[in-house]
Length: 103
Image 1 (tube, rainbow, N blue to C red):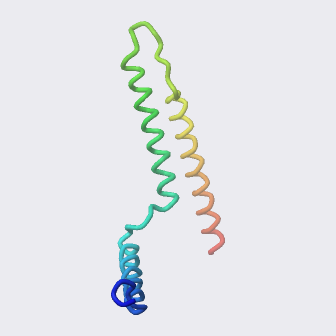
Image 2 (image 1 turned 90 degrees about the vertical axis):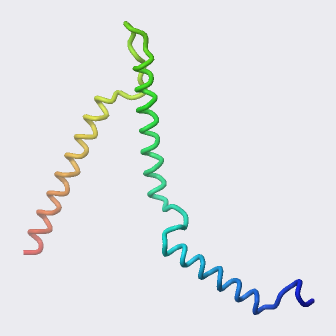
């Protein structure tokens, strides 16, 4: 069979090199994107596109007519602020409970 098929030692050496290459790429962070990062990127891109479409709808609306928006951004901002406040209060309560438990 000779040269065409290669020897087991050649295959093992090639596989070892491939593994070493994969490990070095993994150490550099060049493997697949983690699921959470991909999800968050998708959410941010979706919000950005919707914002741009709404902004374009406002810019191209004729005078005297109400633009048709996808999102009521005033309500979204208010809900975001209330969510941030709730998370901050929850974090403060957890910190206080931890502080009391560790005394």
